[in-house]
Image 1 (cartoon, rainbow, N blue to C red):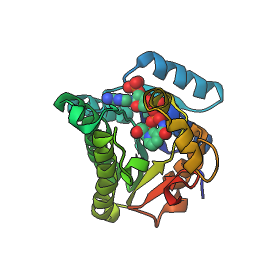
Image 2 (image 1 turned 120 degrees about the horizontal axis):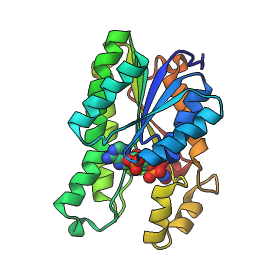
Image 3 (image 1 turned 90 degrees about the horizontal axis):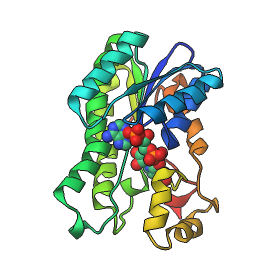
Image 4 (image 1 turned 120 degrees about the vertical axis):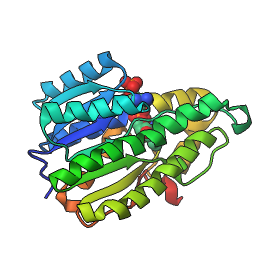
Length: 251
Ligand code: NDP
């Protein structure tokens, strides 16, 4: 049920953090994984780390905010691997500032990286998956898809948008046998949140106090949900937004 042998998975932002942990889990379940990011050196190291574990991994550079780079990315996936079964829309960024201090450029960077990229990549993947008879898309939301924060207006808008986008395309593409779901990670220790802990005073302690599990998550905590939502085990699940958060969202 969870076997992904023969499937090809593309993970945007797959060269580190949550994306790399998800890619490793998909590869361990049998998929060939393609990691995408802008930093070629980081992608090469991540690909090598997966290959050294005996997994099939490849890297293709792309800035997912750029429509032509996204088109090139999907062309390359097809040229090199001949199919696409799984897309993880994981690339993400943030600018931590009060909303009244955000410039329009900063707003666009966050919205384009987190939300517009999800549209561009999903649209490109839809055509390929439909042709292949179906597929799985996993969009990465956040606790800020649900809650607000004084330093996260653009990020929260983008991640709320990711959930609503997921619901709409899930209804549209169900007839093509494509299931689209969102995952809402809680507070996970990565480069992104290491910066947050430096920039937002008291964040580390507040997260600890509010998370029933009693600790921050690690990228590997997202491994199981990735395999589940990419596999036939989840074939009747679409349009959902599943928290993976140690209970943060219910406390
Ligand atoms: P990281 O900073 O470790 O990873 C972000 C990834 O996105 C990097 O691989 C980066 O690669 C890639 N990326 C950023 N901008 C672009 C771009 N324009 N084009 C292509 N790739 C890009 O952070 P996380 O692993 O923490 O974050 C992964 C996802 O999880 C994000 O969507 C984030 O919002 C979300 N998330 C994280 C949480 C956490 O607690 N860590 C909580 C909730 C959600 P490169 O630099 O090579 O381009």
